[in-house]
Image 1 (tube, rainbow, N blue to C red):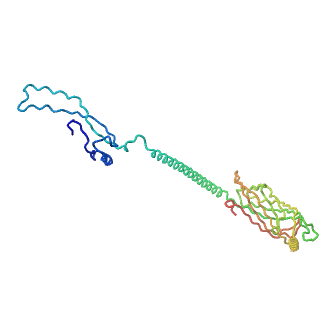
Image 2: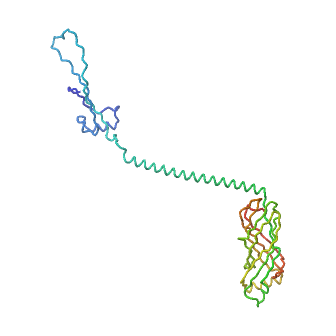
Image 3: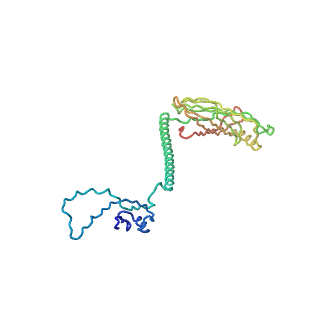
Length: 316
């Protein structure tokens, strides 16, 4: 402390008041010149009280009543130094804080959008699975109640025209064969299920040894439960040419009274379950048969039919 009553810092503040970083910053500068430090300084005044004047040796104070002490004058500030490092004083956030905030905000938005899409896909998958389960249960109930069975199909007869004299060398080069197939559709196994045949999209084809001869349509009609229907499907061809070897084979087969033909049917079918019709599915029938002649009164000597329907539609 100086005799003029002012207090000056003679050493850096103790570690109990400031951090080690502040002590290190303050120790690098002279204590005699605080203004040269990179720290901010704040000054306050402290009142100074002068001692009473000294009396000469041997003299005493007069014995008269002591005056009442007067109130001291308002204190005048002394000098204090408060040091704060500049790097600890922030007026605005540093720019890197704003960049970090934008980065984390964008990442949170992307994460939220991806979670929303994943949640929507999960809900959609659950809905589809629930619908599939309900549909399977409904089909199982209908199948158990109605017990649909596959009708039986066979070709009763096959009338042939336009192939007379195919084995003769004097026969014309092009033929126009015609066929009338008498078909028997047996729905006797279904006591509760009717069958609706759609003519549109149907096809009847007759071939010989892989060579197509004629095409036609399956007639449209409704077959009631337990009903047996016999009908005629016609097929017609034009401009059919045979090689000499095929002509010879057909003539030899006619002499043996067993001319083979393949009769193929493809027809859209709907099931009638009470008052409800199902969706249309295509039923395919392939019949391998043989007739005794190439005439309109030909008789079937052998037949074998194979029926193909979609799975889970009919039982055999």
